[in-house]
Length: 233
Image (cartoon, rainbow, N blue to C red; front, side, top):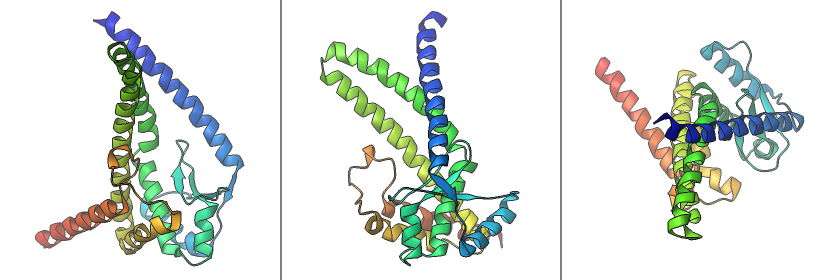
């Protein structure tokens, strides 16, 4: 039994070590292309989050990229792209809306998504390689393509789950901060226009749920919290 499992376990370890190495290289590259974001409006919200989460210091970095995005790395750094900052400075995105992005990234960090992905994605990559190899023997050429699509579907599904969880964390944090979910929802409503990327109806290959799905989930979650509070009273 061990002899059968060992090759697969070694394959997972190889993929995981590759992910760790790539992640460290990415951290270094991002740090070189970024600087600390200093803004009095955003700083006031960050201090509020610091107090609620009992953090000694909460810093956000501006990543010198034109695309509109926010991300967090395994080492705990939160980045907002220059493209996003430009939208904020032009007035197309409000300070509190930008803060909701930071709350979302804090959710990824607090829930351990970045480190979890390294493990789960390594396992899925190993499974995909084995599955693709087996399928290629049964269905030459097309077998490997099918294997890659299955792997993509699994990874995308896990990623979408993480996005919903980070949204939930952000919603709870924003409510506790007295801000509420309105900025979170208003930003999601305009995100496609800001990015120029329209969500596909075929969601199984997407890493993020559609804005509509995320808004619906946030509203349902908030409604369930209100119901619980009402029932307790």
